[in-house]
Amino acid sequence: MRTTTRRSPARRRLGVAAGLTLSAMALAACSGGGDGGTDVTGDAGAGGGGGGASSGSCTNEIVNDDAEQVSVWAWYPSFELVVDNFNQTHDDVQICWTNAGQGADEYTAFSTAIEAGTGAPDVIMLESEVIPTFTIRDALVDLSEYGAGDLEDQFTEGAWSDVTNGDAIYAIPVDGGPMGMLYRQDIFDQYGVTPPTTWEEFAAAAQQLKDAGYEGYITNFPINGNAFIHALLAQKGWEPFTYDAANPAEIGIDVSTAEAQEVLTFWDDLVDQGLVATDEAFTADYNTSLVDGTYAVYLAAAWGPGYLQGLSDADEGAVWRAAPIPQWEGEEPVQINWGGSTFAVTTQARNAELAAQVAKEVFGTEEAWDIGIEEAALFPLWKPVLESDEFATREYPFFDGQQIQGDVFLDAAAGYSGFTFAPFQTYVYDQQTEVLQSMIEGSADPQAVLDDFEQRLVAYANSQGFTVVE
Image (cartoon, one colour):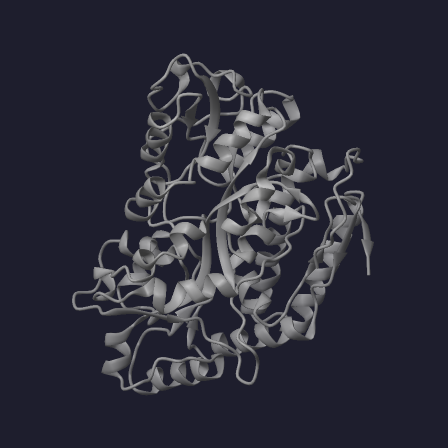
């Protein structure tokens, strides 16, 4: 639940600020790492320093040496082309870009800079799910003070909800991960099984494939799925956290719900029957299984097609199609999201107004999005491109010419209304993985898993100085 209370100017820092450790997260925002760039450890000499970087420390070329520079950390694929486009079209400001690492590597460097009080960039790429982790540390600027509110109508409801809290705007959305179902039409045809449209049909199709002789699995349920598993639970109405950045000392935690138990029981049953794999996601073996016929279905975000096409060793003759994410029978359709990334301005920015301009404008043109879509396989959240006929009717050779955006992902993006993450989301994911392991191993049933999960999170929140409210 989101509130409309305005962010308080004075906030009490919690013990969680210094104690958070940012462990490895699977990349959810886009299909791969950035081009080139150098790794940094968070000191000002490595491209950070709140706008103090010289052109010599930039990965990219500075077109106008007389313009003020804004330092940016980002790992988007082909991002250098986007930076070049921005610098060539701006005389008043230039981007000085550094790849500070992908996902958790960048977040660790940012955390180091926060604690040191120096070394952060002016603008930083953040996955939307970690924004509360950094707002609670007073590390991000409220962009409502720099006209960001004027952009609200340019983004989907869910995209805007994920970067705001009350009246505060902590980032500008870039790309998203509305979910769909990518499936092997050739496998379903070979075994005479109809692709499912509901989860009940999904379970039946899994059994039908096995009974017909298919030796793989209908899909994979990775216990390290993090935001993927959150999304599956959210489709049933799971709202585990209530959190208001204007009142950062309080958090509501309601993990163990009947809806969550129903979803976990569904997947646990499929695992027990040998119909679904439980391979760790984003490993070499997992990537191979995605394309060699081991899985008949890839439950994917909108960046998934690009991720899939980037893998090698695909089955000859594989026929891929995209379809909407299955729904629960008898319930209103609920669209879900896995991943999504943003640009935020850090509180170490030397010129926050200029940094806000960069955050708002770097992906604010059709030219930038031509690069983002063609070269990086990003799914745009910027409506001028998202709602264009060209994007909706774009044909994808990998899917035999199917218009996957118009058929699947545009409706999924429009139907997603947002999700509230915890201000210690990395810890949540770590504990989620641990408790799901006990379910997969058979040592705990779904209800016990959820009860344990909630107890762990409540205990952690209390230990970090939060008041856990009903």
